[in-house]
Image 1: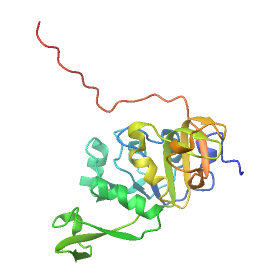
Image 2: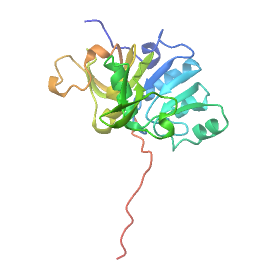
Image 3: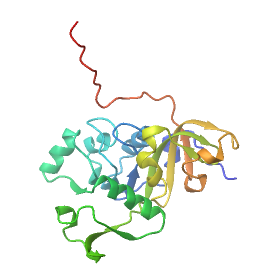
Image 4: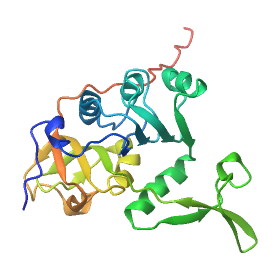
Length: 236
């Protein structure tokens, strides 16, 4: 078994990065984002990136770091409402944006990983999402053709992995990390803990190690909260 474990994010990405590449980045809000790998991409200085991600982080966190340094040329996302720099660049014509419904984005990544070049969906029919795309009628209903996504690189964040790269996600972090782990030519994962082969329950594996080519332990992590809200106390 080839050794997949690297000492840090920079070494795990060595030889994989180039200007103009497409990167699938896992995560949901600030939950399950590959922080160490994003930091290494920022430090690399590569530019002209197309980033596929459910969201664009927030100012100064997640992919927001790469927006701040102008390394991203295009975002393919479903939700970008918490990033003021994203908004500024988009409105100024400095950033190309492809909005994609959330479920469609997840399926485009899953389809790409499954070798499916395209699929039809009702989501977006009759809206700007369907403009310029092929439509087809099935059983009296109109569907729009969406393309599967296959990136040059996927970066994902897991909870646990064994030395073979078998990944387990925890709760919300599974959301986009799992399909994006399969949707690229090569996937690099960072996790909170790496355990020996045989330590994980085979029935609990979310992404088989065959998809993970390089792996790092990024711990310790500070678990950031996008919005901290509390319930108002009732009057005595």
